[in-house]
Each structure stands twice: as C-alpha cells, then as structure tokens.
Length: 255
Ligand SMILES: NC(=O)c1ccc[n+]([C@@H]2O[C@H](COP(=O)([O-])OP(=O)(O)OC[C@H]3O[C@@H](n4cnc5c(N)ncnc54)[C@H](O)[C@@H]3O)[C@@H](O)[C@H]2O)c1
Image: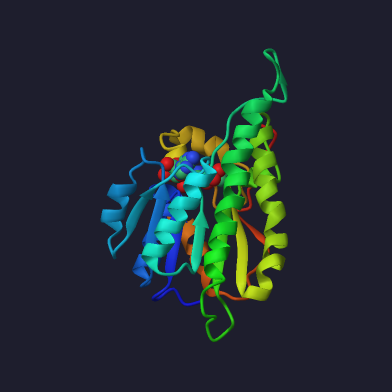
C-alpha cells in the first residue's frame, strides 16, 4: 500500500522505533495517532512530529482502556490502514535462582505486556481495517508487531521475555491467514539491540561487547532502520505472515 493519505495507529510511539516509524509515516504523507503511557513524552512527540499527529494516553496492559483508546484514535483518524505496536519490555530473572523459582506473577506480567497486549491491539486494529474500502490490489491494511531476536535465542534470565516474544512470532502467520481474506497483512519485526529509550545510556565498550557476534555491522541498530523496514513492509504486498529479523546477522549467545 502507498502511505500517502493512509492512517496509522502507532502504539509505543512516544519513543524509539515506533516514534521513528510515526515520523516516517508523516514524512511520506500519512497521518498518525500515537498511543503511549500517560507518563511518556507522547504529547511532545506528537507536536514535534506534526502533520496533525495526535497523542492518546494508554497503558497496553489495561486491555479495556486500550480498546477505548484505539476506538478514540480510530474515530478521530476516520480509518486505520497501518497498525504498529512496539510497546513492550522484559525483566531479568532466571527460571530458578537463589531466591527460588521464577515468580509466576512476574512471568505473567511480561506475557501480558508483550503478548496479550499485542494480540489485543492487533485484533482491534484488524476490526477497524476490515471496514476500509480495499485499494486497487485488494488491500485493506497492515498490522506490524515487534518481537526480538530473544524470541529465538533468549539469553540467560530472559525466559519470560523470550516466551512472550516467541508467542508474537508464533501468532504472526496464523493471524495473517485469519485476516488474508480481508486483504489485511500481518508481520513482525524481531530486532537485535537498538538504540532507543529502552537501551539509552549503554556505554560504547558495552555496546561493542553486546554486538561482537553480529556478522555486519557490529553495532546497535538505529530506530530509523526499524522505520525503514516498517515502510517496506507497508508498501510491499508480497510481505506477509513472517517475522523478519533486523539484526546485522547477530545471534545472541547464552549471555
Ligand atoms: N531497543 C532494543 O534493543 C530492542 C530489541 C529488541 C526488541 N525490542 C522491543 O522493542 C520494543 C520497545 O521499543 P523501543 O526499543 O523503541 O523502546 P522505547 O523505550 O524507546 O519505546 C517504547 C515505548 O513504549 C512505551 N510503553 C512501554 N510500556 C507501555 C505500556 N504498558 N503501555 C503503553 N506504552 C508503553 C514507552 O513509554 C515507550 O514510549 C519492545 O517491545 C521491546 O521488547 C527492543
């Protein structure tokens, strides 16, 4: 689909990879609603991005509140063609440590934040997209979720995060098949380490250590490189049902 004139809901858009994606959409002539925590820089990001970008506060782990925020954003935009979700994160806890077994509650919270919230957002965006008139190629919209290469090579202490991100990767093809007859495509990007709010302040020597196993380039990714792939995903109708690694050939070692 061509981005010009299209409407995007970008969840987590106050910072990092989603913010860069929101900027890209506006630059290419689309319109954006940013959903992010009330405590985030959403309002500031919306005014800096411009192009009529509006901010809607929302905590994606409040599933009913997210439904209301998506409804408000979609009503205001008048349609939804592109749904981008990067809100997420993890904890560092082993399956068993000297404090005892991993707390189930902590595990569930990470799954709620990454997996259940991504599904909640995707199902609601899909409903809105289904109401669009198909374009000349029969397309109604594109849903983009965010996993991590930890979905495939989780490091020690990433058990909850890996499970949640593997869940996102696992549902991508199924969701694409569910929504294919409606002309809605579903993709996931699995980044390696990227320079975003989440990883701000990692000193250069540590970055060098963390990226030494990459094939090329041996560095952290930039949010604009995520946005670049997000654009290709939106524009290329043959991309569907896949989790695309964006990692410079990096494979995480156990630690
Ligand atoms: N940065 C990395 O190295 C990296 C690598 C792999 C995967 N990821 C994934 O990327 C996503 C994070 O994106 P980023 O790296 O651009 O980080 P970021 O911190 O710059 O942006 C994340 C945004 O999500 C928002 N957010 C967090 N929790 C939320 C919630 N409960 N409800 C609504 N909004 C919420 C934050 O306020 C923030 O604006 C996560 O899903 C993370 O697992 C990041």
